[in-house]
Every structure is written in C-alpha cells, then in structure tokens.
Length: 424
Image (cartoon, rainbow, N blue to C red; front, side):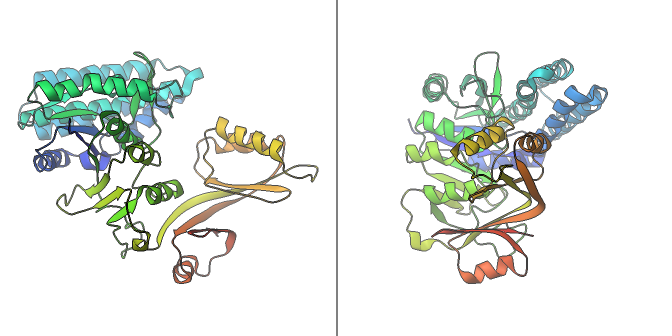
C-alpha cells in the first residue's frame, strides 16, 4: 500500500490558525493515505518539563503550572470550534486529570521515568485536538496512541526502538484502517513510545522527526514530509544570517553529517531508518507549502554542495588529565566515556594529546555540575566557559575568515570536508 508520513512540529501547531493551516496543507495532498505525526503545541514541552521539575522539587507551584497548560490548550480549542464537542472536552479532561495525578505522585528515585510519564502528555493533548478538528473539517482521521505503535526498551528519555515489534504493531494497527475504511489520515504523536502497556518512554528531546522516520520505515512509506517554519534545509541559520541559502537536495550522508554537527532542522536519528529503505525525506515550509523545499535522498551529485555552517553558542571546553602526568590511555578514556554517559551529557567535539583529553559540551547541560564534580575526583580538570563552536562543511578560506574573524581560536580540527573551531 502507498502511504506517506507527515510531521508537524510545535511551531506548526502553536495556535488555532496554525492548526487550521494543517488542514489546508493536507487538502493539497489528497491522493495518498497519510500518517500525521504531531509534536506538543508551541513551547508546551518546556511547560511540561517545568511541571516535572516542580513535581520533584517544588510541589507548591504545580497547580499554577498545570493551569497554564490547561488554559493554553483550552484557548486553542475555543478558537477552533464554535461549540466544543463533548467527546473532545471529555478526552481533554481525562488527560488533564492524568497530568494532575502524575505530577502529584512523582517517583523522585526514578526521575527519568517520571519525566516521560509527565512530558508525554503534551503530545497526547495536541493530537487529540488536531484529530477532532480535522474530522470537523471533513478530513476523516483516526487518532492512534503512539505508545501502541512504537515499542522500545526501558531507557527512559532516550529509548531504543525495538524495530521488529514496532513494524508488527504499525502494520497491524495502521494498514487495515487504510484498507477497509474511508479514513485517509491517522493522527499520532511524535517523541513518545512505550516499553510495554504501562511504561511510557520518550525518544529524546525534539524526537518527533525520528518518530516520523520510524513509522515510515515500519510502513514502507513512499515519502516523509517534515513541515517547518523555514523553507527547507539551509546552509546556515536564517535567524542569524540573512543570506542563508536553500539546499534544494542533499544526500542522506550529508544530512546526517549536518544533523550530527548540530543543524537543528533535522533530528540526528531521523536519517538512518529512511536511508535503510531509500525513503526520500522532504523538508518543507508550512508557511509556503507549495514551494519545493529540500529533498534528502541517495543520488545527489557532490558538486552541488556549497559551504554550510553551524554555530553552537554557550559551549564549555573541558580538559581532563591524569594527576600523575601519565599518558591518557584506553583505560582512562573508557572511564571518562562512562562518566559522560552516566550523566547523559553529549560530547560535541573531542580531541586528545599525550596527557590531555579535551571535550566540548553544552554549557547549559542539566547535569554538568555533577559531571564536573565526578571527573575532579579522579582527574585534574580545567575548563573554559562561554565559547562558540563553529563547524563548516565544504569550507573554503573565505568563509573561514568570515566566520572566525578576529576571535581567538581556542581549538581547531580540520578534515577533508569539515573544519571546526572553538572560538572565544
């Protein structure tokens, strides 16, 4: 069966007008059954994270934070419907009650478990609203719980997909709907999954793109379209560079390189399942849906590539050395990697010498103080704060000079296709 997968992020469903635009876009693609993957609305994931933190550390603020979430969603619902359907309001009330119960009975010893059970409600609310609206507009859709579709292990906040179970679940629960009914759309959640019936997991922050790729893989979809507030994949952040250029088509390899280095337009895990089945990925603008966007696929000539650059601000350089001035060897590296993994902190860059191992991490990483404390128990640790990490793909000296200017180069790495600077 010919199926396509659309993904709408938070910015594309942040208001009633944005939700209405989803229906406008869907009407432009009526020919194929479509699985619609939706994120939490607007910045609601941040709001749910605040409820999670309050449940663990400051319960007196929970009521206020939950009311903010409820009011936000109810305002969108009021703007979408002249008269709110009873069935929709009843379901929303059930999600609100679920949120209240989970926020007031946290498991402090299982912080990540509690995170997934609370924050996942954002996607459940958004999809409930959107599915009801689409049906009211004559776009027949069926709501599906992603926790019944995408099956994972028990690694909370960064779960690993069980591909066999997920494929079976998707084919058993989605394909029959498209085969036997007039329903042309299935609405489900990005970011969330489940280890079993009772244990909600999540796929990592901003993981809705990955959800779309997982479902496309499981369903052998013809294509995936990710709808963004940018015209496609650009060679630079358009919020910082007015002359950022659209990349009309790039290879899977180039896309995964850009995602790895920090390009925010695509989640880093998205490409692998699509590449494995040669499923093209389109990145398009939900503001101008008729524009071509970017196609990510296999056969893209290398000569089309232009310099692309990613700048990550707020970085910390950590230099780790043995206390006795001995070489940094495999045993030390194994231990250092284990420490970083245990705190869930990603290394954005690594470089080693005889007696130092240096890494660059996000300054605002939640567990960074605990990481530093643990490293200092074993090693001599020095660090530099508030640096910029600049990555340039397909660089030339002109673009290098333009981006580095007169800033001090704290660290430099250069390969055939990529150059990276840490600047102060």
